[in-house]
Image (cartoon, rainbow, N blue to C red; front, side, top):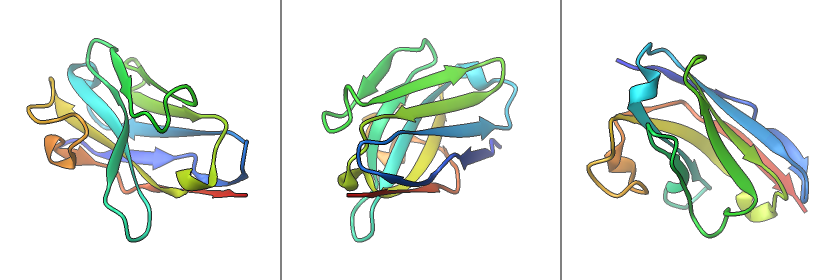
Length: 125
């Protein structure tokens, strides 16, 4: 069982930056593919950034060029650097993990076995 704990959320004005972190409880962190999802009130959970066990990254169009996902396998930590934040980025952000590579679309919540509890990001315009 892997436990994930997010931190770093908060309130920021449009154009500002935040850095989210996700600490994992597993010593085999390097073998997992990881993703950041977000969910706004009344909307479905959506994936925004993905990094596989080999550190290859993918982003959805809405955040590409503004968000950067990274991992520190030695510290079992996943990060999301968010720059040029917009009001539409307001949501609760979750980290997710799956052993190896996702067997479904990397943007499908069903592809991941482990989830954190989420951290709120609020961007005011």
